[in-house]
Length: 391
Image (cartoon, rainbow, N blue to C red; front, side, top):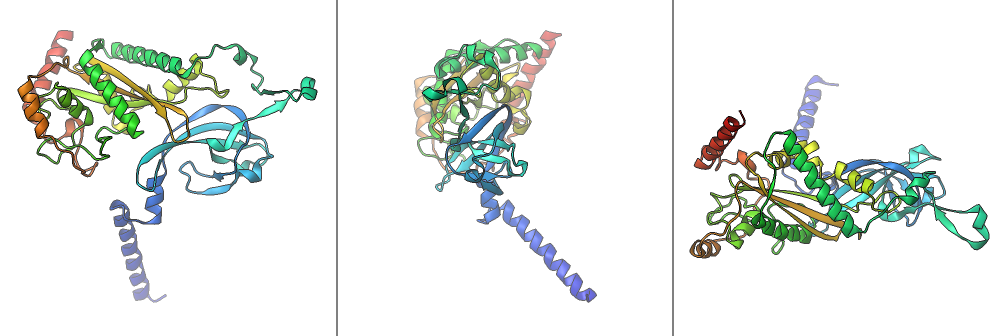
């Protein structure tokens, strides 16, 4: 090939590559970008293997992000199918609203190359006829030769949620003790905020710190384009804060959001073990594997200064009709108390709600309004005093 022509082609390819990269960053409407945005794997966990059978036809995906279709369930419905993993995928409706959907990794024992991810609604637990009772057409569910499962005590969903709450609080308290920080102190003010925030998050059916469920828009601070956490707005509306900028999550309080899922085991029963499995792979991850959030949840829950807390819960149904309970934990450096009425009224009249770019403004103590402020100096003084006391 002519050297000049070859060089020209290389330059064109490079320019084209740069163009594609620029398109992805700016999220223009290309098929690739929309697919990535539509299907995001939120979490994946291993399951104890159990057998399933065909319920409805649906696609079988090769990859966890559902980007490549392998076959259809109808074509392999007569094969031996076993579930080994579960994942939660974040999807978006045509209007852009996010919701979670659950997929199961099904291993095809007859044709390993046909194994893949299938939506849980297309599957059901495998049942086989009992040879002794075949004339009565009686069936029983396979327990994978683990007869002990039949005698394990099971609980209702509401009971399971309360048990999960108790165990999660106990876990956080133990982790705080290991870190050498003060025990949590329950605060009625923080509890009021947590209860309202849990209802708001359940209404949205998504874990958002900034979205107002009534408007679907991002909340901003009064007379500012900076994102205002919804729990700050709730605190202000309840009369706990008279200056959202001064008493914001950066200096006064903070919020963590998580959820309890179905809480069931492979036999669709809620037991102590199944609850613990959900905590291990879910809520407790706020401390044990919080790298995806830059350890933001862990820093809040193990903070030496944020010792007052409220624990809010709200249960709803997900897109698949399964139970899901949203959890909101509010932590504060001091008990949340009411401010005077004049401050509240002047504050509420200036509050605005506008849509802004959710990724445009930094959060937590990296916020430019926090660094170098009197609030930061006060926090540093508290930490220095705590270190001196512990020594």
